Length: 231
Ligand SMILES: [Zn+2]
Image (cartoon, rainbow, N blue to C red; front, side, top):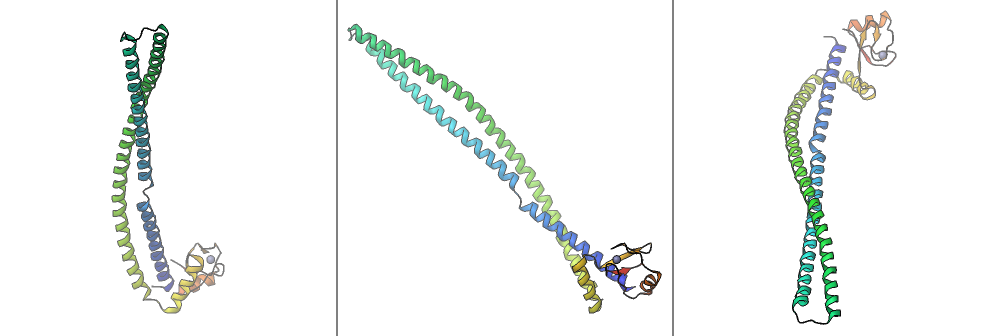
């Protein structure tokens, strides 16, 4: 087999290996990324916190209402006990009862509104919990799929690495050195010749160049320096 063809095959193998390494690192990054899960957890925590706050303020309103209720009863007791006969004092007590009852009605309205809010917040919390569950399920599925895919790629990488190692041992050091220097500087070291042109740079090759390449010697393109490979 001509040397250029073998070097071309080595290059194909290396490019294949590189693309597998890239895929593996992308999958590893995807596997590490649990931001969707964290976000769903945070949304739930936030909704739960609002719910808790609302429960606390509702309890506070209920306590205030009960407090006012006790005060109203106290005032009523005094009013109707028959122990107070002073009209001024009775009128004051009556006014106090009205004020306390008005205040209590206001607090009770707030508590009703608070209960509506509580229902909404509870619904929001339930929704966030469901959302977290479905995000978690999807995440676990994709983790397991990606882990499988990664393992397949990693074993393919091992295979390609040992194929490359085995392949490399066939070349003499100076050819390999040229190949590796070109790979490093140009990405591709070997360029196909198609319809008399170097595919790497498009240069039109003279029949003499093509003749030499066909003869099996290593010929480099005068345009891009790549090793020319003729099918
Ligand atoms: Zn070229």
